[in-house]
Image (cartoon, helix red, strand yellow):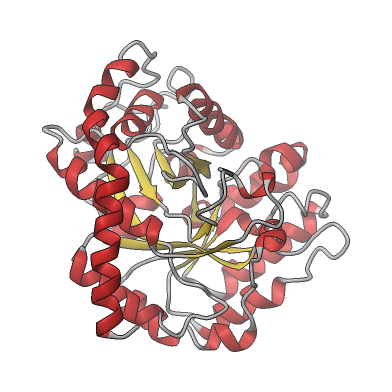
Length: 383
């Protein structure tokens, strides 16, 4: 991206942001009033996690929520249409007991002329890579988050713009972000190597060649210790490992990058995989690539594979320091707090069956704090 076009884009982008979000901005703080009647699910506030583990009250798994305090995978803006306002979304987190969240953009924006909010409802409508979501997230974060008198949720911003089928200019765009929002983006992703659900909307999967062209972008992430979440479907019910080669090549090509494999490679297209084979693939990848981390967001794991607890629980317990939780919630204005709370609960159900060590690492945030070098600590489990 040349300097000439970068400057032009910034000017246009700022105008669009101001025009499109001015009214929303005026209403955001007022939206807090609508949330005050909602039931608060947890009593531990953000400040409690700043204490050393042994100084915090121990966590009683019998009486305290099994839902995660970390939402490591959520989208505050939808593919199209109106979003839940920023301040209201923060109230969702607070009232659901979530104290830490990663704000993913959505790197594929539906055509401006479309009235759709969700790509699956609109096959044939293009959902193409864009930096708009990332800029809007940064803009809202900049004008609202840092103005809150007391921050009750720790929010990390993520860059989601790269088109992995054509990543040549990704590094240049990072430098554009550096200029406009210096130091604000500490994560990258969710980026799509292959997402079968988006194929009817013009999604172009990555290739071996395009993965090799990500080198400059991945170097920036590596030097800045920025993790990157990759969506890479393993395959589908007809060919369960059809796309495994893409993730394998990425991991081999960039072994020193911190890479998070979204949804453990599962998808709605892969609802009947042999769980033993799935676990074997995950174990091999974790053992081979020390910087790989698994993401358990999205309901597919629970909806389709929860009956195989005897396979998954030993695996999760063994690799509990390599797993991050999340909801994959997409904050369309058509949704509300009850929907977010439900998605958090379903995506946390597997945590009821894991060991105390695994629960502390995953649900109480110890993995996340360690990965991001944050000044927080998970409480010890009561015994």
